[in-house]
Length: 204
Image (tube, rainbow, N blue to C red; front, side):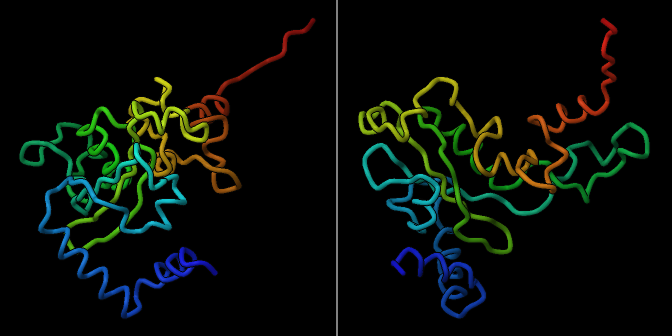
């Protein structure tokens, strides 16, 4: 096994003494940094490479901090003004996962870069920390690389806002197999419309 394989395996044992110590130290370090800051290199190189990162010019890593927990309904004094069904304020969860939110906030802040992917690096009681892989699409290294220059196309602007990254596709419920029957045909809405539309063949 190569070094990356060993690194991948050790990350699967997060309760081991080594990883508990490492993650505690990292969370302590990240807490003292800005909410969004550039990382000189990926904390998890094996994970970053699996998600498309390459150690060459044009690729950038940013680390972002996201507050953990559910999403409280933003209403004044808990008054929702509606039917009892929508009276809930506190025990609500956001539709999107925290990783997708992290990608969106990074993409908003760094508008000239394109978000490729992201991965988890640490967490504590209050925050989760993610590293986001971004591309500078105006760099010749990216424009000339046939394996990645699809990102230079205008249709990939702010793909993190539209649920096109791995974390974004996860909250959209897309996938293959029997677990993903609710999104056959592209999305929940498309699947629902197909199931609920009556289509009668005309007699010819």
